[in-house]
Length: 154
Image (cartoon, rainbow, N blue to C red; front, side):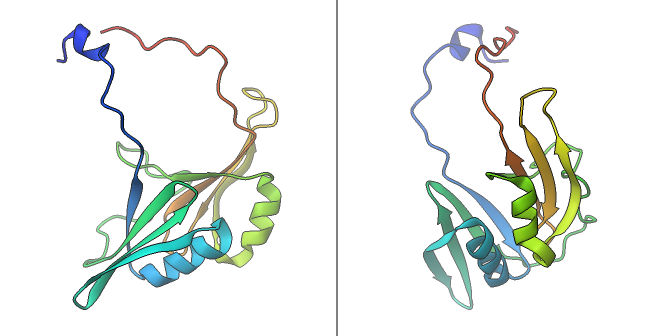
């Protein structure tokens, strides 16, 4: 266990860097995120017959790798796998329904659209699968809590 005093030291400054996706077809995934989410190619790193592709949107990057094996798992359902690990990627959109219409046949609707106005007025979400089955949340109207409860002490 980390001593209590260690939890209250200021961390060394860090910035979120990227999410790495292993893809059956990195070029198809790059085209999808470029077309529908405004990503742009930032770098290609050649690795013999292979390559790693970095795409970015604002300060957010995705690193696309070519898969070397098939997944041993079934594709995720609803809003992602229910066990510990990465559940889904999420993008804020102005209007969930309009974004779904724009995506059209390029995605599979997995869950929603759902209205969460009981928690945050105007908050909506929908979960879709990209061409390789990765779950994407489309999020409209989320705002931070003004005074969230403090992290419990252990």
